[in-house]
Image 1 (tube, rainbow, N blue to C red):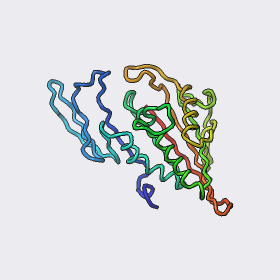
Image 2: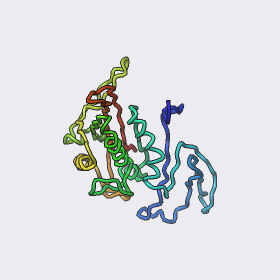
Image 3: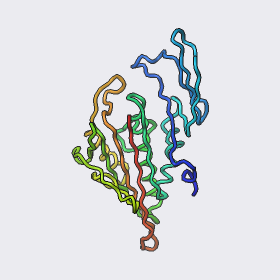
Image 4: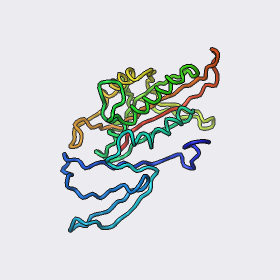
Length: 254
């Protein structure tokens, strides 16, 4: 198969270095984490008695981004190939993992704007949706595309539907013998464009469990999952055939 699916590993790992934050008095902290190249991260532990570099270690990943890399840089390198795979009928997921204050929300959601469009600070989720809507628009004469979105959170070991007043939902077992797949028993909302997406996201975001800490006045206190089902049907001379379904998930854990 072409593209990323031809790789021996379907799981790829990207590391993003968060800049030092003045609100945590990190301004003068020692620089102990550096990007060497596009796939190598350099770590060094300062000694206890003086600000010099001690033990040095390098780690290799599929992608490494430093504090100067933009949201667009991260998306183009690490996420865009997954969008291409999804429109080709494959399942894809982006999972952000890290400790509180590590930048998960910034990477996945970024700066949310009042206007329904991608801005410089937009995160992965909005960029994924924007490109999928662009795909739908550009192929409207040959493809019938329907996208449905579910937004759920995991909080205190409960799974809540953020588009259904935080109703507690249960996961359904899939039939492993037939490879049947299903999303959680959550409300699915058809999204047609960025404006409708923004309204749907705003409704869900109001329901999320948040609290204040030193890094973020409205930090999420739950794990959020955005589940998108993509239904595509090839159209020719008013006939429809070759229907294929894929799913795309973005989530933050840690």
